[in-house]
Length: 149
Image (cartoon, rainbow, N blue to C red; front, side, top):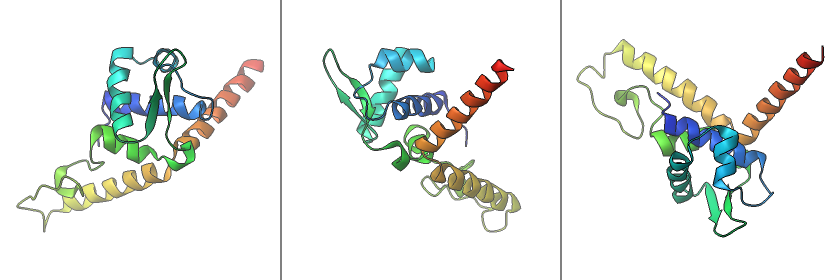
């Protein structure tokens, strides 16, 4: 799996929306500024996430984007798959975009790539955006403690 810029930015946008969950729509310019994402690119990303059902939008002066579900119910794997497709490092081990290989039945590398796919998929499927927020808060707390010393 190679995470594209689109996948990275989508993940960062989702973290921002998760941090503001329940506070109403977040203007796109705020998401772009706080997450250092070019606004035009972010518009395309949020449109894809809206089409996939992960975010909703509200138009108007108090408009913006917000999560369609609670952050603890959306996994990182879901968003990465929407933006970048399968989590498999090569297509012969992909569940979604499997491409047969003439060496498939006897290839030791295929076994390795399948193990890698399974480990990455399992970890990303078990990690929600609420989990990512908790990690972020811990990092910020450590940083503040380090600055006080």
